[in-house]
Length: 433
Image 1 (cartoon, one colour):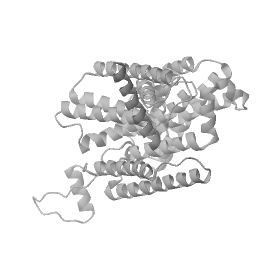
Image 2: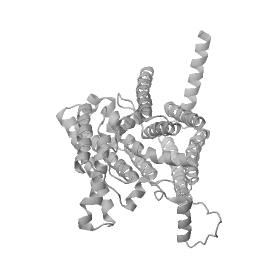
Image 3: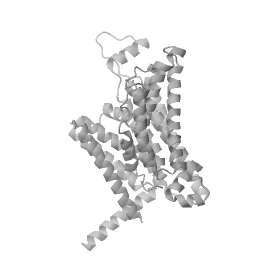
Image 4: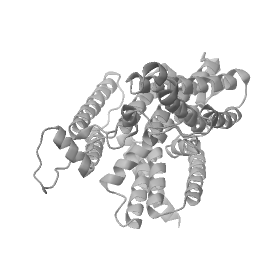
């Protein structure tokens, strides 16, 4: 038995050493493996209907709302705070966006005015940001725990969403605004998608090269060249594969036929309509842009360093000259900002402002961040991990819908996953000590 344990430990050390050589987080790799197992499992259970271009395209769109909010939740949890009100803020700001462009501004600007949806989105995002800032002020300067403040916010803003529209569903939305939510017109097409892939691949390569030069300049250890090429190659291959899948899902035949006619292409009677690829959905592009900005904020700015410092040791951070209260307010405002962006996507996707929008979104978002490696103890977490966690959570939900599992059972599964993720995080932190 002792010999077996010794061999197991030796194997674990070799695996850990390999990933350390690649400078890849073992937890991130584990998450990718879990995601692969989930996909394979649902592919078998659904008879081959899960890993298809259509379902993966829809899965990407569905992940965008939770993914955007999860990037903000990473900062909250790193700072040892939590925001339970984001689902209600999403519903409230989404309702504001809907009622502003449908009822409040048309008498002044006229129906169909291009500024209607732009003003609605900006005002909705500003409202969500101010709500987050207000809650942050109460937590920081009123010394009220974030759990209590945001629990109150959950109730207040869910009621406010109902009050703003008197319980009505407000629709329809502006056609241009609807593109933000994806759908038939909410994607960029095949050519633009491949251009996007090429640009991102070049940026990944340049970033890897510049990072290696910086490490060499400061005398830091360098990864072997094969490891550098392997990691960069996997990242580029992932981008290319993603775009290929997005382009493999075509527009409906009737829509494609209309587009060909608009382009002046005459189609012979009875001949098949040439397919037109949808490409990357706009909400996914928004999610990737938000994630890139938040990752830059976390890793390359003073604000990000202060967030991690406060989460690691608030007292030491305070003694080190960091304004903890001001940072708390800023983090809550940032959470409100990304929630407002997510609200625009959710409202555009529904093509309506509804009172139930965002219900239980806070739990899914927290679960995504924790599954992605963000510690509830503070000081640890990554934006990329949160996106992977959001994809895991949405894959579970999408797969359970395809299998035909009832909503109550879906909630049970998500609850179990959340508790398990927190337990695994606790065990991981103990092992690190």
